[in-house]
Image 1: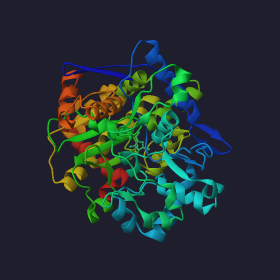
Image 2: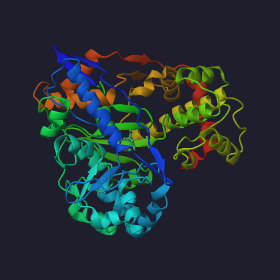
Image 3: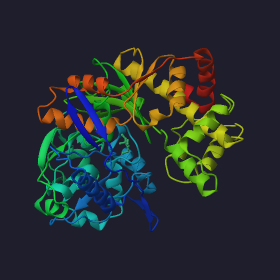
Length: 476
Ligand code: LFR
């Protein structure tokens, strides 16, 4: 994406969009990292071809995943995909050894089986040769940035997603690293978002015919960038970053690391300008993405808009799903897993594609209410409404149902939250925007924002009680 800032307004446009398709190989799931690098270079090249001269660039991506490099900077193997099942049982063993209190107390990060901590522990458990050969640990966007600049530097927002970074010391946590037998030397100090970390390397400039553009370590975690772009007017706002994952929470000045936040398995990810994101991961549109893939494989191709239409026509509140059930985390035949979930909870299976999509979308809206109420409890704030950003807000029925479930307004926009937040940090670093609050007011002035008011809240509130009972969430 390319962005242009003039007269207090931002314009963005798309230079190059490409699918990010992971690859199963030998029973394991990998990111196709060199393909991603290639597409990134294509984007830079397109900017030049369209006549733009870039002032700077920044990269953001999903969290937790990483590459390991040897002494000479050679990448050792393809980075594994966090949805690979490899580390799912390792978490239990690590937690038994190190204790949930210690892990959460030192990092403030929610326990999820795919966190870097458990992925690395899995390597150590199987005595992977990577442990002998590895010298440098770089998380995905930092790894791509390394290929652009030659600099091996991790960035704060991304580093916190590893569950190996201690927000109290501002360093990687020695005890956790020792506890999983991973060399401390792999982990160099991290830089804050907004730090210029080199320029495009000479060889890359030759290859693409571009100038040695400065490269900025932005909020390299996509969720960090997305929340930077929430057009809120003051602190204490609630957001939902809505895409493959749904991340719901609030921005805080200090991590909330308490007995209660651990019990609720909330996270405190590093944010921009000395903030933290007190939030929780919700499974998100992933379930529908996987359903759609499976239906297509079976010869039923639907666009997302068509699926949403089918959901709209299906009967309401027929099936209640906890979208965060472990059944839904890994790739596979998601419609069959939905049926299995229904059987396990004594419900009728979805009778049509529309009823399956409806159940997932209602399940998301209910879970948003559930987690937003917990966020209010932990932050001690009653939110007047919810900001939604990200590609998922193009599903306006989901925005409306979210508002209905919450009984509060939803303000949806911008769609390209991560890309815009990425750019905001670059403009602040270059002195073109003063601070994050000015940045947010510029976002508000530049991009459409759609307000949804709740309707049928009483029906939704009644159905919510049934949802809690069927999913077993009322007990927790
Ligand atoms: C969203 C996201 C989430 C993170 C998940 C896995 O794209 O970055 O914040 O928990 O992906 O990395």
